[in-house]
Image 1: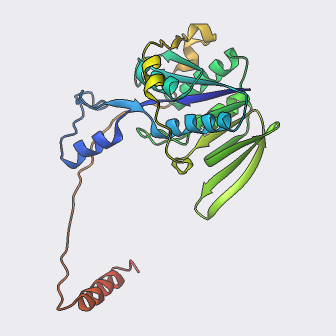
Image 2 (image 1 turned 45 degrees about the vertical axis):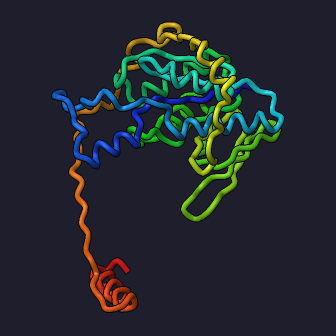
Image 3 (image 1 turned 90 degrees about the horizontal axis):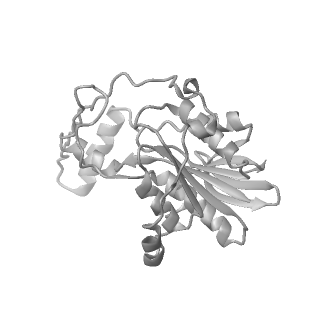
Length: 266
């Protein structure tokens, strides 16, 4: 069985948030890119959990090949991390940062899956932490004619079917789909495993397979973005704090409840 996992390299969201909170995140003159060059780049956290989901399937006795692919300028570091976690194959499709939209990314990934002879299971993170769109898995399912199951907290395989526990606002939901299928993984899956020192050292010597757009038999028109960013800006962040007076905790609590009712919060 072949499991293909789609991962993305993103700016460290915690570092970005810290810049925003201190009012130091700046957009360049083009109105689209950040001026900060010191923000670390790392694997999208949901994608790490997608790798963990595949590794758990293998831990449970599944005979499979775990193939991790990333589209980007130079995602070697995160692909080596994937190899250190336990991926069997890692590949990159080099493209300029920010030159693709979700439609183009899905077309490239669909072509990659086809070039590999297909996949029994495709795993993706539920969304990327930089744009939070979460549209690529659905587009990929359309292109590959595969069912898509979203927001998984666990994934199990039973013969030719995948059994997924989904996270919903009303509680967990268990669904089944026939493989091949696409499943998006949420953070409720749990913390991904930490690579061992030996695996990390070995992964440092790995160079990801280079897969070009031309080798995937895609035309230039196939990767022209349908959606383009016109502007990006940093919203102002304001914090307001009101101290509640009272002679006792009970009096303060009563005042708080009164204010919440007045503002129709409760």
